[in-house]
Length: 352
Image (cartoon, rainbow, N blue to C red; front, top):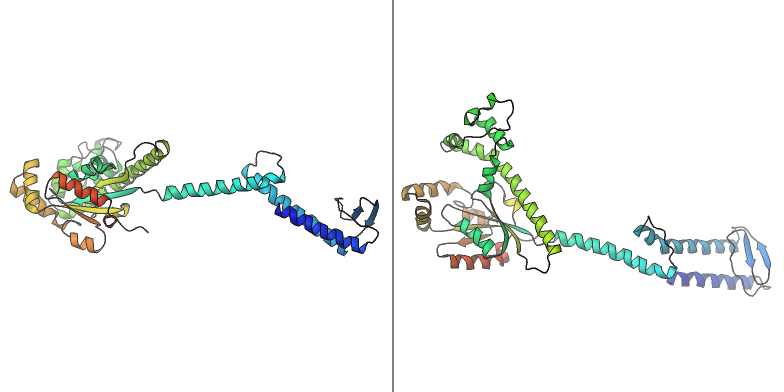
């Protein structure tokens, strides 16, 4: 409407200028599509002119402004629907432009909301007997977190017969660790590792263990990423379809004793370490796993070199570990500590 008003204003001005120049005509209007013809409809007179005349130049400017107005009116419609051909009056152009803008904004806001979705992954580690597995289960059951991923269980699936991880391990440690010797088969599809034979090698030699971990950990990380992506997709779908239902916290718990050693902290929005005094951990191992105190003590001591266990304060100072959960009392106290930590921003990595 504003553009149309400008057109009328300019044309009216042109009319006055022509009326002044041509005293025989009080009113005039350009209605011919030909640039060479200027018509006085009421007087019936016609004047020929060239585009170089001032009157012709004025006429060209008017027609150019009309063309621009037409483009502005109809262009948003063609962007919205190239396949349809509808006839809309200029008065509808504003609503079309508004629709085009709102669609664009809604698309941007949808992408933004998806990117800003509060989906987080929490890593939980700790020494043997600290109670990290119990803490992870409580986070899901009492803390209402989305899911619990156990890296140890996922690591076992990496050793599935014929998997790429099995082939890589055999390539490093030799065919003697294979239950069915692959030299007797044309295919490696059924190749399976004898875990006792492999354990005898890696537990006797720390460097062999390091080689095994270097092979297996990347495969486990791939599985973890796949599981996290699946859980994220399921959660986002549930948000769209079941908004009325009480939603769980969009937090996935990743439990792994080797969380930091494996270099998986880049997947996490927070890293918590569950701790317990050595005497408490010893008693738990003796009670729950049937170990002797000597054997339990050896296992605890063996983990002293693990990141986040023997080097806890160092990892805190570097900002890798974001929270410590002390677990030396009962389940009720542990549950309260976990719930409090979930809502405490200090227990999470800063947002960037």
